Image (cartoon, rainbow, N blue to C red):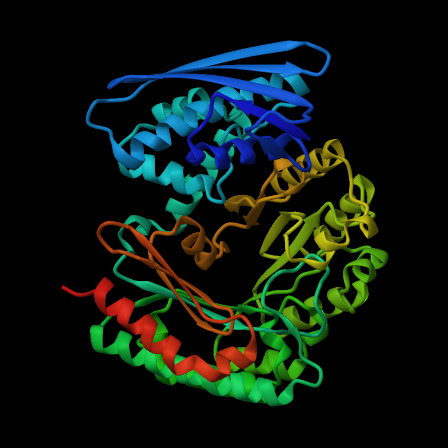
Length: 498
């Protein structure tokens, strides 16, 4: 869809216009000089010290015209980036209204295109805004539906129930440990994940660097007397390495990290059932790690084959029962809405199979066409469901989780997500993932160690975020892990200095 934009010369407005357009059309191209186009949008912006008023017109090829306008009061003391943000939001409001009128397609998330909607809810709550006014703001300024506002409210309330001191954890940290190996790489995946077969040399070198990072980061945390809230082993698939390597890694954790007994939660993703063995579960038990993920994604075998997961449905169920029999009492499972070839019937079947297992938490993802994934680069090979079917599947997930006693406790959204929907984590009471809450709400620093691990340094007072990422390929990581460790410690020194 090519759209000619008139009246917008400031390039800082181009990105929000593109993001709003992408909610309606698979590929949106904006042009700011007249050229062949399908739609023409013209905007008139009037701005003074206390108000911005924007009127927009949308003209179709057949001459039909749509009009929308929005006036926003902006206090005189609001200036700089915050003022620009409010003008952008007003423009997005007008543009979204025009496209909704033209397409007949209502965007339940309104103009929100960011990843973390509940973070904004928390921010307004922490600023002292009442629940009623937060809901009014989302509805009148962001055009959110009541359904999505209530979902956010339910999640925020659950998070505060699970972590009552959420607002005061900025002086602690959580740790993400990235292990970049998998049995095979899934077609939708863009995580740093390398097929482990034939890579034993690089695995060994990588683990040496990872142990070094653990020791040095742990030493610094001990010196500064900084507590760890949660630890999360992700990847890749952390259970791709051997049981012996896992044992040595957790031993390093126990020796390096301060007050292991006070860490609120330690999670290990065992997402690929074909990596789970009795020996590895014994190691998890040895180190008192009982929160794991065993991820079916789908209970249809043809789907697993299509997306490159070389395990069977039966193996997922078998490994779940094995873990349960060995005392694993906090198991998460993931399902993905919109996998290639799947419709409502296939997703309903996955929900029915989940009911037979009743994991402590169930994360329902909506497929996202991530730019670097094999699936995105070969879209013609992967037929996915329509927007209407995707929405129906999400509705069924919401009903199923409610009927089975699960409550939503975190959500996030992604670019190019099917149906402009969301990913939602549901949990039985008391089984919510604390790490998932911490990473999504960005209330504290997350130190990423290991290959491809991203760190988010949150200033304890200002909440300003600094990003830092380790390299994604094992060779670059192995060549420079000492340097990357020192860089992170330097950032931590500045962040937590008195």
